[in-house]
Amino acid sequence: MWWALVTITTVGYGDITPMTTVGRFVASGLMFVGLALISSVTAIISVKFIQNFVDHHTNDDVLEKLDEMQKDLDELKKKIQ
Image 1 (cartoon, helix red, strand yellow):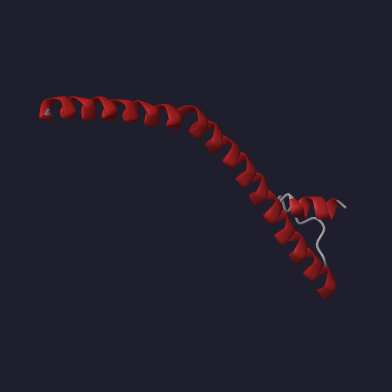
Image 2: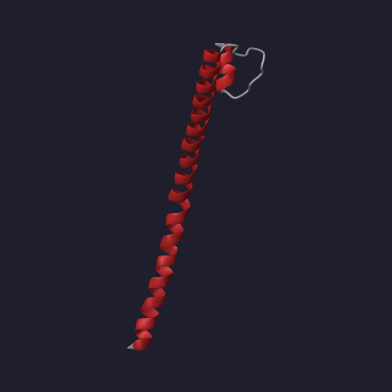
């Protein structure tokens, strides 16, 4: 269990290592599982930060720009008429 924990967390102390071919294949699989786990958690956290930023900033900016464009368009219509 110690070896699996050290491997999956990518710490890799090296105090316990697999000696057999089967053990090395298991270790390789466990390393990929660890990488997948870490990248999945990182992706989930990143998406939450991005969604929070987009929900609170981008919509307001876009609405302000749209209001400005609408005012400019109204002014142009008045000048044309």
